[in-house]
Amino acid sequence: MISVLVVDDNPIVREALRGYLDGCPGIQVTAEAADGRHAVTLAAAERPAVTLLDHRMPVADGLCVLAELAALTRVLVLTSDGTAELIGRMLRGGARGYLVHGEFAPEDLHRAVLAVAGGDGWLSPAAAAVAAAALRDHADREAAGRALADRQRRVRAGFGLTRREQDVLALLAQGLPNAAIAHRLLLTEKTVKNHLQHAFAKLGVTNRTEAALRWNGPA
Image (cartoon, rainbow, N blue to C red):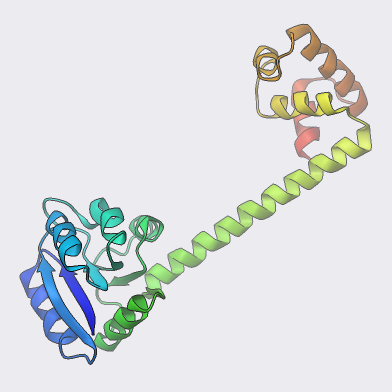
């Protein structure tokens, strides 16, 4: 039997959820809470398999108690807020699933509870779109990082920069002045200036901006 804690400040919603879930085979609503703080107390005492968690509630909202609940139970967010920001924060915070009111049928709720109880996830269309966008953004950032590293390797190989010249250029490209570069690398400012002069000559540039562009751009 999958035990469920229903957390929502609206008693009508709680009653509707209990009525439906108690009629689903293998599922039983064992406790209800009207705010996030009470939900944590009940979750610690009851250890439900799944907690249906609303976001907007008095005393403590869903996001405020998510981490505590996620340590005690598998959390399935069930709320009317389908904004990308909240969905992202809930999923990053430990929610196993996210359903938006109006975007799912009763049988979807049944399947979502079963999936989350079994260790899987379940997302409504809005939540799935946010998760997919986050994955694409992460992949794009990784690809950009690999491309930058590749360009930098080609700069180093193509212009014969020494290891120390590479270190100085890398910090210059981050916008650091000579004094900060010297402090970071435990060098004198004069030594940093000498390294930059040698690097500029190898790169075929005449100033810091051109050097940074060459360091971060194509070889």
